[in-house]
Image (cartoon, rainbow, N blue to C red):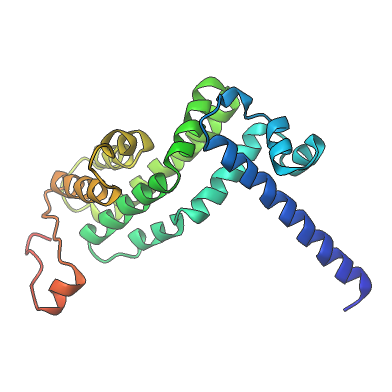
Amino acid sequence: MSPRKYDLGRRRGATDATRGRILEAARTLLGGKGDMAEVSMEAVAAKAGVSRMTVYNQFHSQPLLLEALSDSLAERGGMHRLMGAFVATTPQEAVRTFVGTFVGFWASERVLLRRVRAMGVLTPSVYRKVRDRDEWRREAARNLVAKFGSDRGRDMEWASDLLAAMTSFEVFDALCEGNRTPEMVARSLSESMLRLWGLAPDDVGPAKARRGRRPNAAG
């Protein structure tokens, strides 16, 4: 390896490390209990131990920093599991995976995500980023309904809007209170969606399947 390539790789590694520190600083500040107005580029720079200009060079603006943070949270929060909903062979499996993926993601950083969405109410540029992600979720819901709901004589647009609403952060945040765990919320939301489709939830788990229990014929 030439010295130039080695130096380039070392610089890239340092840049990635700096980017990671900045994202972690933003995550820590947003996940805290302080005033959200104090979560500025300057505050993030101070928390990360870098200059304000370094933060701007990496992310250019607060909305883009929050967008990069959202991408990082999605990776850490298991959003890659969503693909399983689209390769599922039954609507029961697809809905459970779709709902479970979003509930798991919302639960992974509940306070932080609540604060990011609250910032969107106050800051138009952040609001657009939040709405873009909500629209992406609605589009994913439409695609899932198109795959599994087209032969059920249902209003597909209504069904996809319901699935998108059921998997919103606001619904999760309202339901996941008291003794309700994220797993309980995901299960209840999945069952509700399936019943709206006229399907039995079909809760056959791996252990029961091994004992030979047959799925509900309605599924």
